[in-house]
Length: 143
Ligand SMILES: Cc1cc2nc3c(=O)[nH]c(=O)nc-3n(C[C@H](O)[C@H](O)[C@H](O)COP(=O)(O)O)c2cc1C
Image (tube, rainbow, N blue to C red; front, side, top):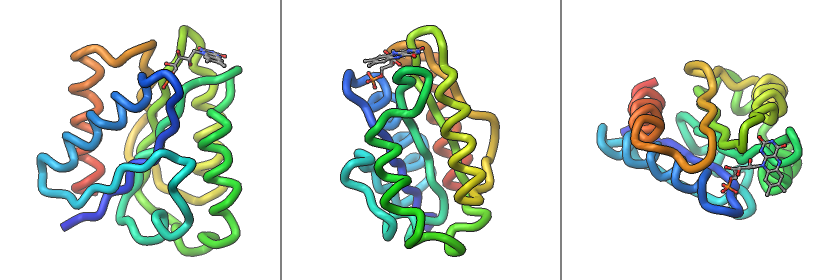
């Protein structure tokens, strides 16, 4: 059974809803899923999983500080241990979405292997976005 980690940050709830849709998709194909607010996630979570979904709101055209904090704390502990780990990035935004670039840079730095293009969602995920997120969860679980 694949172990999937979903790590996200959310102040207003939009990104949390997106994370929960990925959870639904991954659990639907039998994955063992851990979902964590980035402030509570750590390097061991990243090392232990087979695949990771990373979600953030766009705050000031950059990833949320809470997610950046997770990456800051994890780097030295995970270096060399997460190379080619399948990864999926999702970003909620208010009309910009430039923050996705900062997350993809981080994926390169950690040497993750993205399983597809990041999903950018404006505001609260609608039913179409939720379906896309569920599909990403299934894909991640089977990667
Ligand atoms: C402090 C702050 C800064 C923001 N900056 C941007 C921005 O630069 N570009 C953008 O598209 N949206 C921006 N937004 C809108 C959020 O990205 C958007 O509402 C997002 O869905 C919020 O996610 P959350 O509900 O998970 O916190 C900003 C929101 C906040 C609270």
